[in-house]
Image (cartoon, rainbow, N blue to C red; front, side, top):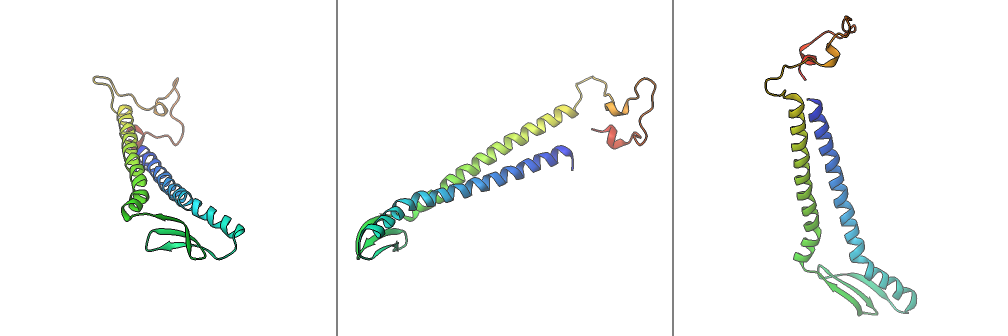
Length: 151
């Protein structure tokens, strides 16, 4: 594997880790945002009101806070709304990540081709470490090999 390929795949892995971390942060923030109003109400009622205070899900996605069997707060969420909130923003993040990583890979490929491809009609020079300077021979262990000549 060439150096540029390793760097681009490593960058893609780092980008994938960042994407998964962003999804996780989004889902945690969504749960906190969705459950903070009923939880705050539950804590206030439990501290200040006598009687039994309960919080719970009723019939799939209906959340209720009750005081002595009387509903004090309720919220309903349809399956489509829940699916849109859970999947929509992470899907948009994933599409943006694909677009951005594809652009970054294209830029890296173009840069690599620009470094490798000589200008039309130009003579190809050996790498700097292969050119003896002022009559000296290359350093010991620096024997020209096809891998060093091809870059």
